[in-house]
Image 1 (tube, each protein chain N blue to C red):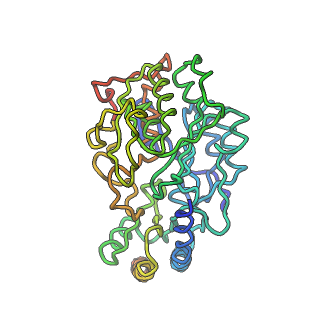
Image 2 (image 1 turned 90 degrees about the vertical axis):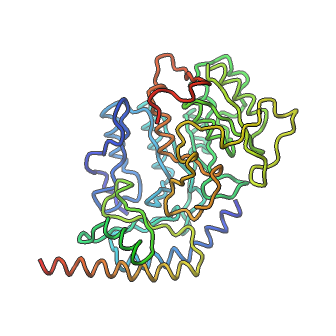
Length: 299
Length: 112
């Protein structure tokens, strides 16, 4: 186990208005856990909007212990940075390793941290289907809409299954595309649509074509927003991998034959979406256009 | 969930065998406990780009260069998608490929 936390200057992966910096894995020895000291220095050096942590990790396979996760969360909270934990591999543990989800812990509930977590779906067994967990307070903060608070679910931290990540990313990256799924509760969809529309976000609703993988369509009476678009015609702005049918997992997946609709955006795509300047606009509201399809400068 | 657990349990043998190969050729690698990857530390005299290219073209083993993850000098090897038979076959080729690359790298140093 390496305790070295110092590395070279982090590489700047993206310029323009946002710098995305990555923890260096070099010099070696390979780190088996996030270098906390490096995170401290990054947070202290300049304002940081978001920290993304993948545990269990890719490419290292490192599993972040609970104590370290809490330290990271505390640092992010102190710095006012969002913490995004990518837990896509939460069940891929070996040799008795234990994964701790911040979102599921009392720590998050007590501290009201805003945590977005990717998880594999429970009922759709795919290595690459991920399910996020978004604290509703984060959603509300995004749109500065306190009047909606009374209608929030009672739990401060809610797990949404299936395609919710698409919606979450789309919140920050219009056009909104809400994918219908049998795992997506209708009342939740309606609630989120209300939130989004109060936030001034243009919402375009779409649906996956019904099929064995996507489940049966909602009964018409439960599906007031669906307009019958199929996925291919939706155009999920910014998700090039989806539209091109390319897997961002390269050689590693063994799911290269996955249909396009089952691929998911990677954490890097989410970073790109979340750190786009329009998220930082002065009034805090996300503004999208149903007709423009994408905002200027979006990839 | 149960499906995932079954898949993970099925990875154990391949994981152990891959680690044995990496321990033999890539002693700087760290044995981690999550996901389905090992990040293999290449010896300093072995070029990462050449290793990726030659493993793919000569030994039919695909891996991802560590440079893509900010870790130059490493290879990310995935054991998440192989059947036991495929794993045995692939690991034999990986073993041979790494041995050849390291030997050639060592020979080149000696010549200089």
